[in-house]
Length: 66
View 1 (cartoon, rainbow, N blue to C red):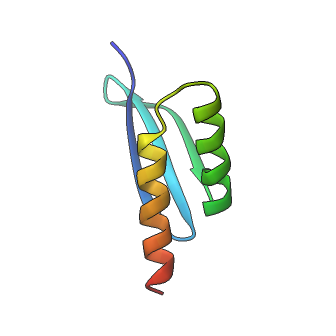
View 2 (cartoon, one colour; view 1 turned 30 degrees about the vertical axis):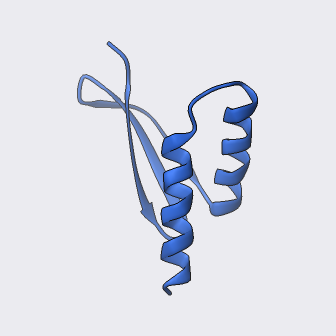
């Protein structure tokens, strides 16, 4: 069974949690600039960056409303 990716945005960062069988097995946090870099890296290696793109959009919207 694979890992589930969950994320949330709490400006100024986006937080990602990878879970397996309900347990967090890995976590990471990104600023807006770091998210942009991570998205580029994922695209370069052919991986799905959708959750990171969505988090980047949410982070940008949250930062714009403050």
